[in-house]
Image 1 (tube, rainbow, N blue to C red):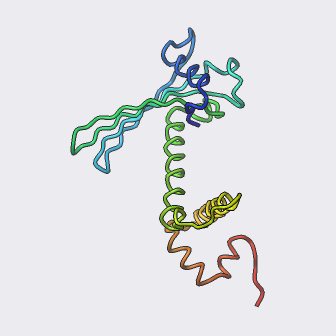
Image 2 (image 1 turned 180 degrees about the vertical axis):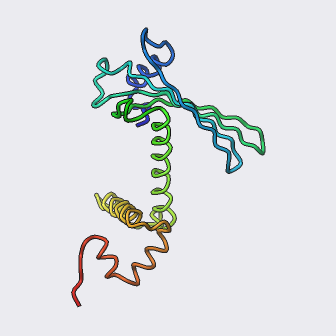
Image 3 (image 1 turned 90 degrees about the vertical axis):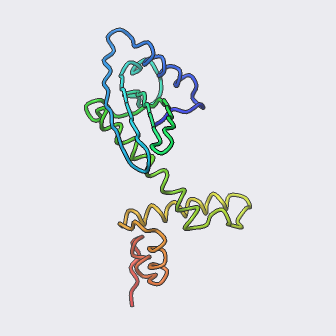
Length: 180
């Protein structure tokens, strides 16, 4: 999990671990380079167990520093970003390379849902504005997206059209069998 500005002390503690590593701290690093979409992206992740037992963050097993260095090929523009994070996965379960893949996978999932909600479900034009109803509708949309992805659908719009025309199949996804 990426540590954001709403956890300033935790973020500062993690930054300190990578700025001035404690004596005896064993830090490991992994790196990936991706070329595509007109960019060259290099990601470096460094992990440490230095805060285990010193920080009261629930389940803390490792902290990490993730650096991103991006070059836009067309313009040559460079962008650098460093973020910090925590994980409950011990080093034997999550090497730096695996953590790097997990962080990338998290953003892939994170980016898919809002786009589908905005484009496929046209959420921004919803006229539901009172009380808790907007939150309930967002939860229902997220549940629908998750259920369709779990069922193997990659094109959510096509899946919605198909299941609207075949409601018995839609009910089967949530375990309801219709008797004829």
